[in-house]
Amino acid sequence: MTNPNPPSGSPDKEPATEAQAAQNTLGNTERAESATTPTQPAPDRKPSLGQLFLDNLWAANTFTVTLLSLVLAAIVGAVLMIISDPDVLATYSYITARPSDAINSSWTLVSEAYGNLFKGSVFDPDAVGFQAAMSPISETLTYTAPLVFTGLSVALAFRGGLFNIGAQGQATMGVILAALAGFLLPLPPGLHLLVAVLAGALGGAIWGFIPGILKARTGAHEVINTIMLNYIAVYFLTWLILQRGVQDPNRTDAISRPVDASAQLPRLFGDNLRAHAGILLAILATWAVAWLLNRSTLGFELRAVGANPDAARTAGISVTRTYVLIMVFAGVLAGLGGSNMVLGTTASALTPLVVAQIGFDGILVALLGRVKPWGVALAALLFGALQAGGNRMQSYSGISLELVTVLQALIVIFIAAPALVKAIFQLRAARAARLQTSLAKGW
Image (cartoon, rainbow, N blue to C red; front, side):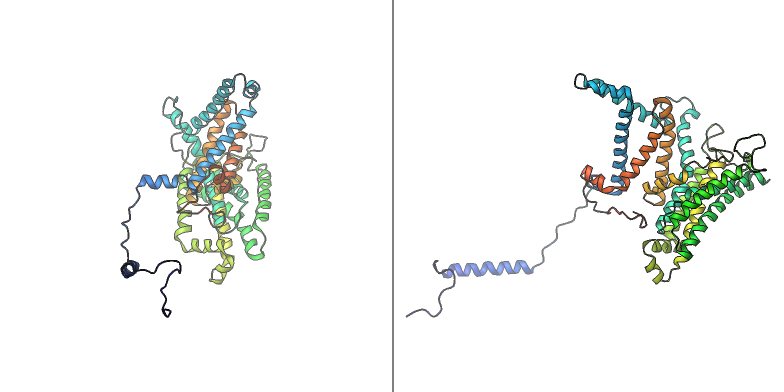
């Protein structure tokens, strides 16, 4: 007679004994209790500062990518120096016979060039006396001041969703009104400087208002408008210089009367060094723009419009008003940068090239600073150092000054392509902050 309840398990194995069944039951009970009982979490150990530094050193954060972009630009610049020097390049024709000649000559050329770049912009160890020691810093700050203003102008427009190509024209109008106020208005010293600076800001504001109102009212693209206004401003400057009462009566070339001493920015390190109070105004403007963007209601509206105009309009923000204010404020900043060119120590009179390229360089500064105010200030300092050191590099090393422009362009190219830098150096993904690629959102 068959068993109605056959033992469970595999048919080819012996059925479990009572002792084994009891042991299995006890084991199952213990496992169930351990599953239902919450485990005590392991105590968290805070990593040390050194561990955090090492963990993030090779991560694709903003600082690392920017630093490595500078390294890449310096390497490519060194290669360009070598291939552009015929004497050094000739040593590579017999590199297999005597490789030391090529290595030594290349190292001598590159090290001297970058050494002179440092000595002309930061510090010269061979300098004797206070004036010689402070001269590199003075030159760097002189070139930095106007770039901070034009960089902030472009960055502020970026944060509002606008591409301000017109910083060059706005700076030109700023330098025109600042100079006219500087030599046409007979005012006492302190008041004269204040009026001249405000006149420069007014000139930039007017030239920023025009594309702003056209963008807000008609939808005309600000890039087209600002480019056209750049040409108008340049040709207006060229025409104005030759007019009676503006042109220097003692000169026959295109140069205006000099700005009165009462309207010039005071120098910081004495009459023999060019650094002036414009750098202090630049720092103040950087703080003001940072406060505007991050602490004020208007700054919130500006960032909201830059991120999504339709959503901002739905939330009750006047996009039309915001566009106009963005371009006016951008024009004010660029106009202040232009006024630095004629009220400072760069020039004391109007010439067709008085503004140089500070408006277009401001675009590069804004990109390098990732359209953030203090980042823009640091980028302007770097560009000012490259420009100041480039003069010495050209004089002492025979390196073309255009190579400095190439270095600036290379830095911006690598900054604008973080994926390329990550691929070259095999960077890990950043944990704390992800790299952004949208200009309007502040990178």
